[in-house]
Image (tube, rainbow, N blue to C red; front, side, top):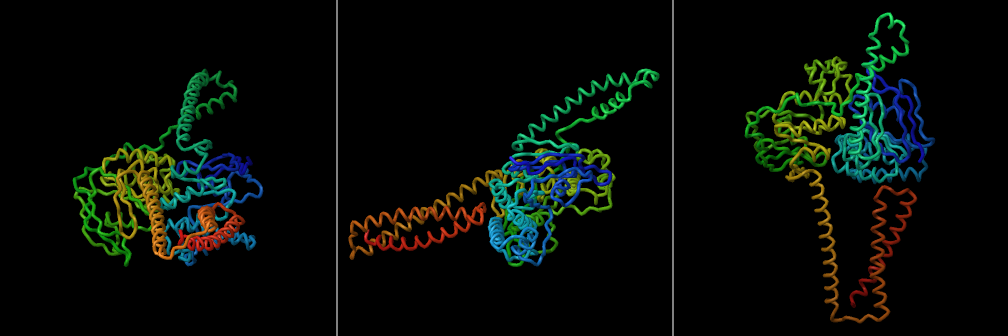
Amino acid sequence: MASYLQIENISKSYGPKILFENIGFNINEGDKIALIAPNGTGKTSLLRILAGKDKSDSGGQIKFLKDIRIAFLEQEYDFNPEKGILDQVMESSKDFTRELDQDHLFKYELKARQLLTGFGLAEMDTPMKNLSGGEIKRVALTQMLATEADFFIMDEPTNHLDIDAIEFLENYLSRARCTLLMVTHDRYFLDHVCNTIIEMDRGSVYTYRGDYQNYLEKREERIDNYNSETDRVKNLLRRELEWMRSTPCARSGKAKYRKDAFYELKDRAEQVCTTKQVDMKDIGGASRLGSKIINCKDLSFYYGDQPYLSHFDYNFQRFERVGIVGKNGVGKSTFINILTDNLNGNGRLTGTIERGESLKIGYYHQSGMSFDEDQTVLETINDTHLLSQFMFSHDMLNNKIGKLSGGERRRLYLLTILVQQPNLLILDEPTNDLDIITLNVLEEYLQNYKGSLIIVSHDRHFLDRLVDHLLVFCGNGVVKDFIGTYSEYREFIRNYENEQKSLQKNAEKSLKEANKKEKSQSAAPVKKKLSYKEKREFEELEADLEKLNAEKEELAVKMNSGDSSFEELQKYGERFAEISEELDVKEMRWLELSEYI
């Protein structure tokens, strides 16, 4: 198995803050790697260095296998708001497509069209300025995936995607013959796509083969071993300390190497790892909650003629845990703004909404909090104990907000909400930009939260652990209530879709038989008997039609899979046309003969 990438001794700092120092690892062909680390420790910086967008402070070596093609997905996508979707993909891909001949350029555009369709962007002339954040992310993913690069580097590929788009991307990458390195906080996505996890922890890099559960177990084992070694070092330190405290006369003659070793031991003895880096137990719970939360009666909401909510009735209950799911653009965030009275006068709302007198809402916006960029962390939350528990070390307290990473800002924003002790906590896409370590502990906190909880999220793991039922936004203002977890809901939908396909197939079969019977009966008065040769021909036609239809369906699947090369697509297309013509001829002859059966 070829080594695609070798990294040795690379470092990155911002001012006095060291993100990582002299790290190294290796990536082989076929590796699908998730990079895990707390926010603010340099995950994005590392990806940008590998993609050639930034440089290592210490030089070091980054060696890619010769001639492999690399594609990089950043969190933000630059685009021309006036361009159509497909034109934007082609324009942004000029560096890749510039040297392609006409056949390969056609292949790239065909691949882009297939991916856009798979991502639910079939209207490819739609201007980019009309797209939501999740739709823009799908365009960026299309541009990257259509290159069919050997090595994909991706920074949070599922951020802002709805669950249907995540599952399409998940299925595509799990089947693709590619090598990839990505940062992701989506644990289901990680498990279904990746075969390796690389963790950055305290300036070191650790590699784990296997799934997320294996990573948790091996990480716990590694930390236990590290702490056991720390205990051994402490015992050795005590003996060395006695030696250092011997008489001054003797100390002046001590070997320098032993004194140096003592101070190294002292530093090592002070290092203890913990598996839980965020502690929320002292943040507090929820304020007292009355019997009335939010009652909605006959709510409807329109933007122009477009309904986002239609005659919605629902009374939210004490201690209820509800998840809100649906495709991008169907009105989930609008619904939250209705509940929290944050519509800002846009659109037309009818019906009534009542809120309890004791209700205290903590609303975590998808867009995040608008901070004073010149304010320090400590000025924002004047509680060093809580900040420490929320992974803001002492040397970060005087950092300006403008210097924080996206994940650190999200973590601070979340803390500003939780310290208010709301009794209704509304979280709109809370998992975006939060690292997996923070998410795990946030989930534990929310499981013990003594208030009502409403979560809008595309994170299936997060929903499965925290909600009791779902409000499913189906589009055109329709909202359905599903009792159960998100995984149970998806299983229900799959079973329903399979049942509908089966019913449709049976209906088509019954219609075909009825038509055959009707034709037979109508032709009865002038019924002609088939000759022996015609009977044999009719039997052969039925066998041929079944075989040709099966081959046609198989070709359609291959052409739409996105896995075929240009040459294969040409071959499949030619054969598809041949079969269609042959079917037309044979079906016409079959109908002619069937009149006399």
